[in-house]
Image (cartoon, rainbow, N blue to C red; front, side, top):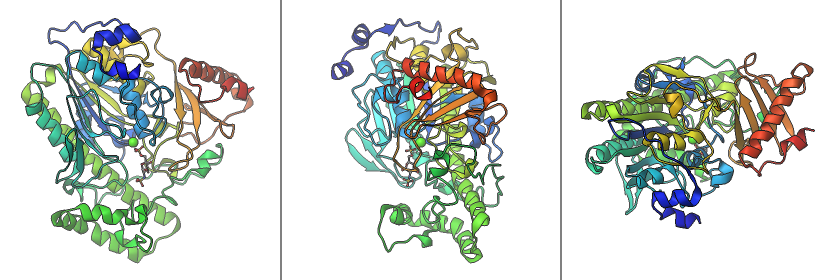
Length: 524
Ligand code: SGN
Ligand code: CA
């Protein structure tokens, strides 16, 4: 069935699988172009429009100021490849098959780019793909193999692999701009997915921002030295602390500390990064990192002082990567303005999940806790979205596919499990808008050792179940927004905890998730 679907025209697909009838935008401008700018691991805490206390992102903020900022956009499974598969298919991980980063995407599935292409859109996918199988549904694609490289990256194309000199964030934008200017059919609306590697680990800044934050002292998050008391055991048992799991040679770029006596992937990684660079790139890198690295080695820090130093270096690197992303978003927005495309282009900025910037002492993601559950989402759509508006409703990456189809006036397949954001973008809230979201994280055992869990979050409370060890957490986000104190089982929360337990089971059944055992049964 799936193989047949990929080769059928849109109308036939609709007849086969069932679709919600299209409701075209009544716009004299015709279907909007869609520019989807997407990054990897960009936390809300590192966007000034979301109130960052660490950095400024003027170009992302520009999208927010001219459009809508979503305060509660959340993922269904906080990890890279799964989030991307959810976005493409509009279905949860257990139905689209990409439960974790290790599984390949079945590219014969129905995706929103395929449906848009079938409806006459020109489609392009440029940059980080991370779904193992070849992109389908695109007139043009040029993607990074796997995680990709920051410096002088290789790209996969339908005709083979090529290496392009430069910094990956600039190159993804160069290729995107080139496709906009020269590659597409200007008589058709377009979908351009311009997807960055940055700011993914190992957070390597480009030449333009190697010294941007060199003299900045970053404020520390309040929970940098969290001891994980009053939570279930997975919070203590993870492997993502700045203190223990952040590697000085690899993550913090003190190359001389790499233990190359054993030639493991990790031990050799700092050299692999450096050896990809041109002599000029190496010179700029050494000038930026060398003196500070020397000072660090002389200081021989330990304990909390060492954690503090690693946090500062981590923020320097991560935020420098974001500075390049922001510059490049500015380049694309400028081109839309200059070319006159801006007026009929829906621009989205988002990232595959959130990230920890030292909150709870961590880096990485995966948890249903707030920082990794949330994803940035700002949307500009001239004539539809009121500039400078904000939305507080619970929305998910599950909604993106339906949103794009709805905006384009293309039928939405019944199998998709989200809700179109178009009404919210118009400032309306449908009566049936969700009041809670469903979450399921699957990759365990795996990198960073985060236990499998499912959970439900509504506007105020969050219930999490680590079902393999049958441990629960319950948070009141109003009184405990940093989730430092689970009140699971406390008498004063018994009623509301019961409500969320029932809701979790309702959502699990609604999502058709048979991979997590019955919640009602375990709770009783
Ligand atoms: C790599 C990273 C992890 C990261 C995963 C997933 N390790 O394995 O830190 O969690 O990617 O990231 S590294 O040694 O390769 O840097 S994801 O964004 O692709 O999900
Ligand atoms: Ca990611």
